[in-house]
Image (cartoon, rainbow, N blue to C red):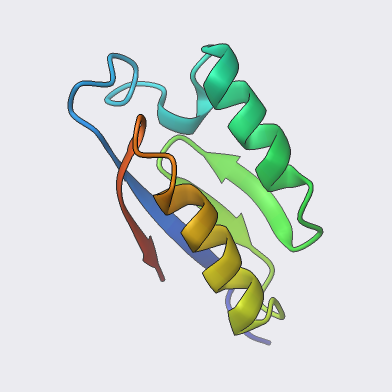
Length: 82
């Protein structure tokens, strides 16, 4: 059995909730971002600094999610697939 994979997110330092709440922030933009992420069937759960993904998720899906997160420059500084 393979281990679940994850996408780790590093936030912009200017974002006020990044240190504490990250992807679980109550800001409407962050909540919308999370709704988009959970629309992927491969997403298992979301933590403040990472998105846990099913181990059978394809590389293309992981890259697509990573690109989507990377485009959120108002919140995200860097994205790393683990």
